[in-house]
Length: 217
Image 1: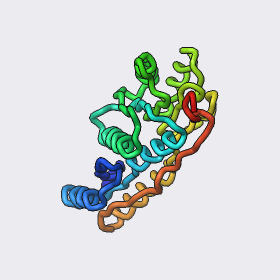
Image 2: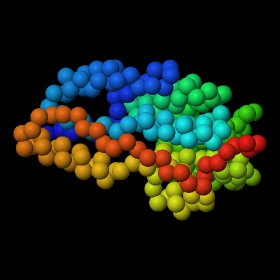
Image 3: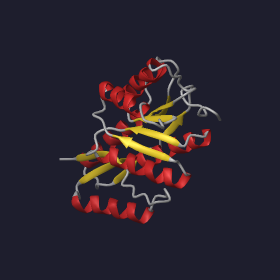
Image 4: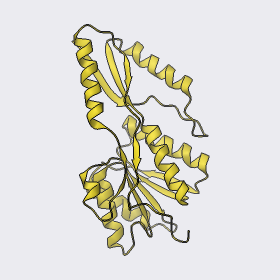
């Protein structure tokens, strides 16, 4: 029987935000040792968050909130860790993650909480498209402008990001290629091939109208 594990990269990020290739290789080898008959398809969560952080920093943002997913999930932890590392490297004054259950209701509630802070963020990154759309609606309902007062970034791109106003800047990943790679690895295992680690193409940041320089820039 063939088994394929589809997950994020085994990234280990240090305080400068640079991925330690040796530690990542050790983690990959550890996975191979633990599951010698299982192939793994890796996606780069840390690199995706680094793209987002770099884009927001270039626009002038220094206070960033991350409306994250469930904290016990490995890919959520990787995104949180990457944001912290990039914030330290780039010199953000604040970058924190708020856990949710990925729903529109919790995404909206978390947005209200961070907007009510004494120094609210000038940019908010959401871990999925549903929360990003809900968060943008909350920002607008509060009498604020997207992106004039708060920039919004969705971790996942979808049609939803292009039916709200303004269109949302989003992290685009080739999910078809991801599924194809997983299927190919499974087929190879069923044909008697050796288990291996396959990496999918890195994500791309699709810049749209929801991100701009913060107020006063």
